[in-house]
Every structure is written in C-alpha cells, then in structure tokens.
Length: 141
Length: 137
Image (cartoon, rainbow over all chains, first blue to last red):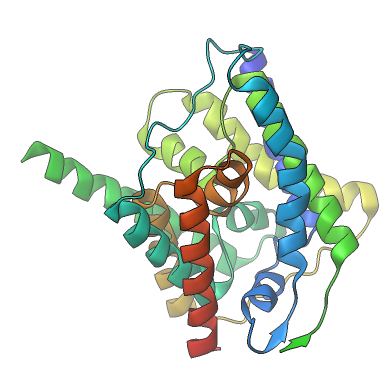
C-alpha cells in the first residue's frame, strides 16, 4: 500500500515540476531544440535543477540502504553502450524534434484536454506495443 | 543564434521539483523515475502494475493541482499537424523502448548516476532532435 502512495505522489510532484518549468509545453521544448534559430536554453536549467537534487541522493543511498517500501534498489543492469542504445536514442530524438513531446510531458499534458496530446499518447502507446510485439516474435524464433 | 523566451528561474525551480519526485520514488520504492519505462511497463508487465499505473495517473493530475493552487493557466501550444503528431508518437515510443529510456530515465536519472550509457543516449537524442528541428522547422 505504501509503495502505491509513493508512486502516486511521485507522479503528481513530477507533473507539477513539468508545469512549473513549462516543459509540458511542446512549443517551449522546441524553443530549446531550435539551437540554430531562436534558442531558449530553459530545458538545460530544468535538467540541472533535477540532477542537483537527485545525484547526491542516489550517491548516498544506492549501495548501503534499502528503500523504505521495497526489498532492494532496482538499478539498470545494462552497462555497455550497445547498438540498441544508439538506434533507440536516434529514433527517439527524431520523434522528439518533430513535435517537442517526450513521454513525461506528453502524458502530463493529457490534463489540458488537448486532442493532439491524446493522439500523441495513443501513438506513443502504439509504439511501445508494436516494439513489444516485434521483440516477442524475435525471442520466440 | 538568438536567445529568446529564456525563463531560468521557473525552469530551475521546476527542475528541483522534478528532482524531488525522483528522490521520493527512489528512497520510497527503490526505483528510477524513467517515464517511458513506467508507462511501457504499465502496458506490458504485470510486475508493479498498480504502482506504475498510479504514477501515470499522478503525472496527469500534477498540472491540474498546479493550476488549481496557483490559478495560473499553463502556456501550451502544439503547431504540428496530426500526421506528424502520430508519426512522432510512434517514433518516441519505439525509440525509448529500444534505447531503454527517455529524457527522464537517461537525461535526469542516468546522468545523476553518472551512467555512461545514459550520457551517450542523452547526447544522441538531443543532437538528433536539434537536427530534426533544423530540417523541418
């Protein structure tokens, strides 16, 4: 039960952060990505603000303590830079640059009841399911 | 390059709030707040499904709370056409799943952990997004 409350509250706070920074707004994000035109550096400050808070906490907690409401810290197991990382990040970057939406802001913006957000999120889920489907076929072979 | 619409204070404050969400999720549940992973797992994995779903619901409620508390209308504008939006959604879904992370998972959590994978991923998706904007913008 406690882990569910933590998840819910973390989601809300994350959504508030995206609203305060206006990263929920694709126009704002495209301003950052328009490096060679009319550039808005704000996104860098969002990342710095988040990293300044999370980096020391990760450093302090990751090896010695147990999380409050789980048995262990679930850290990524992959360490090497592989083909999937490069292909996936390139594909993601193209999609991100086309509209200015990455997954967090797109989901959060459903709150604003914009039809385009809904279409983006449904396509995002479609992309996840399509990749899952292809992965399962590859594994079965 | 001209610098326009730069809002360093609200960006930094919003970033700190996002950082708080990340550490609460980490200290409480021992997990990294990578949104693409959480959303994907809600769809395809039975493990922690309720936790993941509640995180996503919270993510949608965040802007509603913010507007309710501050009475500020959140600036929001999409100018892309529907075919572009649908194609972009699919590319973001496929790409973040193959690359195992997005702006939050690689860009915030991974960089905070000094993960080489995440630093490389963030550089790649930022460069390709900037090139995309340059080409279609």
